[in-house]
Figure 1 (cartoon, rainbow, N blue to C red):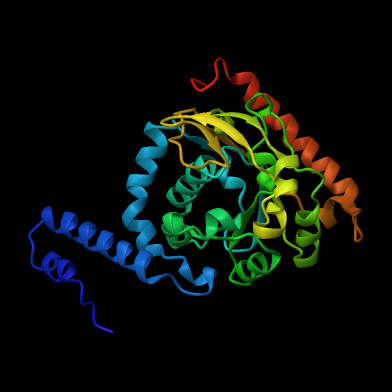
Figure 2: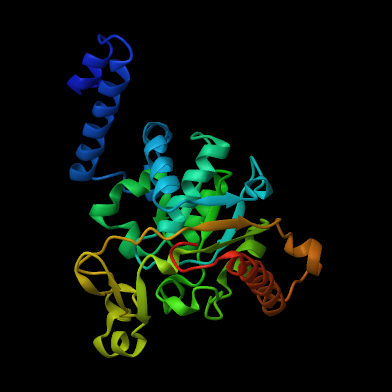
Length: 303
């Protein structure tokens, strides 16, 4: 189908350097159109390397300037083969650590390296956050992870989910997966390495007070939307938020992320690894790495 976006036609007839600005405006128009008309029904198909190429400089600039993002150890991620990146998650629904990591990943490996991140349905399917699906965000499910593996992509999963990302701010230096071992079983099923990813700083983008698990259960939120928490947080501009609504602006906390060496479960534990043992070892190693990152920090938010 021919491109009917008039700005793209204008860009082809505009001299440098203004042609780049017009082309970016054309891309922005396309982004808005897709927000209105909807992205592909299969979330895996929404990944868009051209969109990533066009917007990555802006995302990277924001992550560096606002969150002072640092990501180390990207060389540990296997290239050209599937892997399961297992991270601790912070910052509520406003997934600042995912933005910082995704920007660093695409800067390091390039926009054409397929990469998918599993996110809670509330974030992955939100119309307001629709454009993040073009960076590879898909609803969290083993089926979506398997589909990404079949395409040779690394997949980032946050086993702690809403339980971890809404933990109180004073527990931001703790790995809290809540005993969820599904990532171990998935890695064994597809025989892919686990690459631990630890991050700190996201829990300082607001003051998270309580998860509100009891309130969520009483209201039946777990049955309505897979949300098992009803957390209270404090942040600008409105002050108190419930499940990050009506909305807040993340505080400019410094976010630092460390990628650890990959773990081949069968190489480490033999042909029939015990998921309990693997889970305890991996979360223990991640906690050690997170504690080291925490020891480097001097002040909340400042980092």
